[in-house]
Image (cartoon, rainbow, N blue to C red; front, side, top):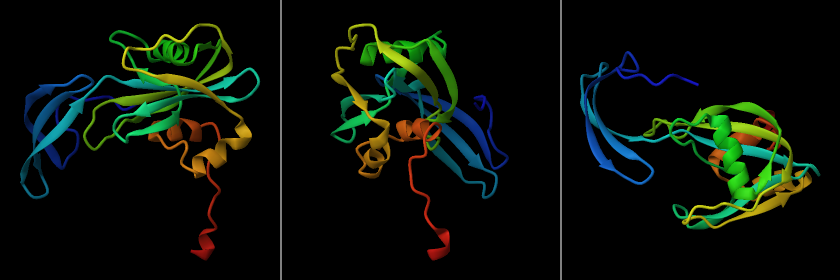
Length: 194
């Protein structure tokens, strides 16, 4: 993971100052006044400060992929995605992955492997999503959802995964990023015929 820095981040951009914006439920807005060394222009950039998050590629004991089915307010649709959520203050991201898997699906695992991380959206966000693989997951707990969550655990046979991605039944970018680290999701195009 790239380390977050307080000063300028690139030879072409210099942070002159920052100002606080509104504190929203999941994000805190920051406005950075940046000078582009290429042309000297100063712009007021919007940055959403947010805690890191996790998602879990969980394979149940029978080999099926364990997903969370839930409504997403931004796109106003039901999604199938890897279980996951926000890393709490002071919490290690593996601990958060174990907790989120248990809370959203009722499953636990003793076999964990770190798959790496990606920036959530480097255009305007400062956080990362950490991907974890959980093998041999078993149902151990009742769901423990937040008041604003309505999540249904969903088991998908691996033989149906590529079709679900192709049909955009699975389209959340963090989920696709995590799954692509474990499975081949797309048929490779023949570039010679393009």
